[in-house]
Length: 92
Image (tube, rainbow, N blue to C red; front, side, top):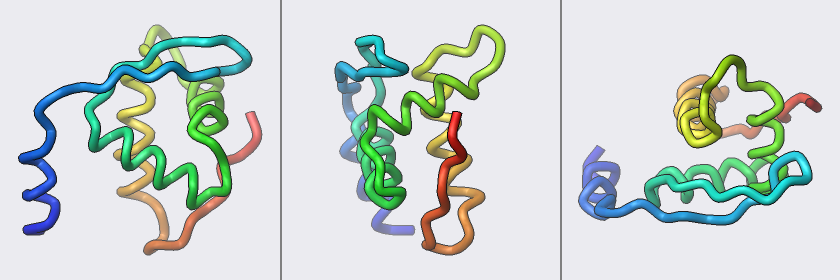
């Protein structure tokens, strides 16, 4: 828990990155810790961040923004994954 709390101190800004999502270039602005977690998830799944973001975009419902969908995905993935073992993301 201490390590996670130490990382919270580092969240003092958001980072904007350009992604290719479902073949379209878009900008996403998220805090640095969420970007780090998304990168770790992508690596663990053998995917790129663009590929993971494309899967997230394809599965989101309603008028949820891509930014919100990515945040929810990261929290959900970290809460529901079986131990530390990566699981495959189903094809969109």
